[in-house]
Image (tube, rainbow, N blue to C red; front, side):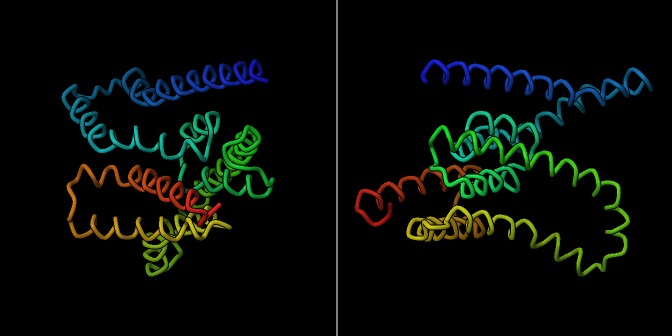
Length: 225
């Protein structure tokens, strides 16, 4: 079994790293095409400035998100999810639902395999739906009232995260409630500027670490299983 796991992990990491490198290279292809086919050259200082701005905005997320999502996605699921995107909105919920339907325990090899199937299914479905939406989306949005568009913009993302919290708390309300209360309290501190910007950038990681600590304490005291 251990030999099989070594082969599996080696294959996952090998394929995952290769696809990530290919994705990074492909990100630059539009600029290469504009330069070669149309002779459009971007100023070097604009490229450097844009790169610095992106790094400054997402540097913390590059570290926090993989650590935060890895327990729910597993190694292969992490590669797949970061390649496809929409991790918190689609990949994590798909992984959670697949595990619940299959009745497997988190942290087991069976759970990792089930998570992979759920994530793969969500990627195929989302790709198909995104393609259809890209074709028909402009027409649909053009006929919707402004009030509806405003409601979609304001409430869709919170509704998705609320659904994720509900799925993860299913059958674990004793653990989920105090963690949710801590997250809400932390958000209040963020909103009113009681904490520095660096702490705001680490908000997700703080919730994950504190959540694990709360769950461990409640488990040791026999409050939750």
